[in-house]
Length: 365
Image 1: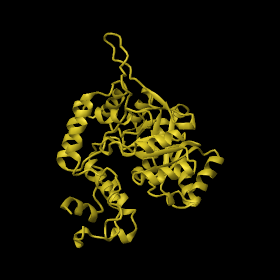
Image 2: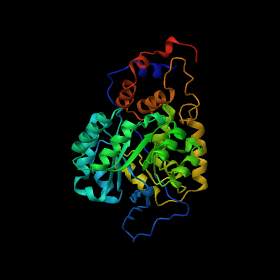
Image 3: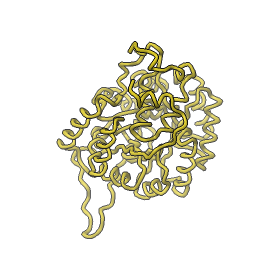
């Protein structure tokens, strides 16, 4: 284990550093931006898709609010036509929901707001929902996700009952589950248990591995929302390349890749400033090209040694029982996105027995 990984696993009090996470949107082949009047900037192209059988028409590029700290970026995104905003109870220590609610208060009837609970019991989940509604300043959320499920067992009868109760009370409109890994098992359970929206990791680094699952969800009428659409890479070279790509507009290739087909209905890229917002909006007007494919092939090779694509092959391999994919995800938050506190909080939520494991004490892997 390298020194940065070891330092992350034992650190606990470092402050978040500057963030550089951007993510994606995407247009179907052949799209072109409408002409604009001379001397006037072109209005952004906002394309929408139906979110499964929910009937919601959501912008292909939604707004992932997880690491946004500037309320004005959210407000401008809504004013320009983005109508899908995603947050969660645990983001920024609970403060993210408060900011999102303030930004969208005057626009509430025009937008779709999703939030999440990581609770393991019905009582805790419903308590989380009440707090989410209070922080967001709304009587209901459009989509409520059971967050970060890895196995079918995570969709317990108790948590599904919490979804049913919340929906009956009118506090949520649609039920959902989010997952970073365990795609096949959780997707099958979501279809069987008749959930209405699935939020999952999907990006070019994964290739077409989960495309059959996306088709299954679409065929079942379940809304599909993609997150972590830009992949990553934690080492300094990968971070420098990402910043260079952002400055040159090169991130659009990854963003366009995700929605080049019809089975993803919306995406929730992170947007921390106006430049990222404009970049993501621009992608909806541009077609997928051979140049995009070539750019991503090169980028895939650059990040391959350092990016976890959630393939699941390392699950169960660690002799100490560590959730390898989760640890790599926490490291990506800390080292790749510059969000040390977010990575630390994920690590701190592991059971004590796992937090006490020190990889330097074991040479078996």
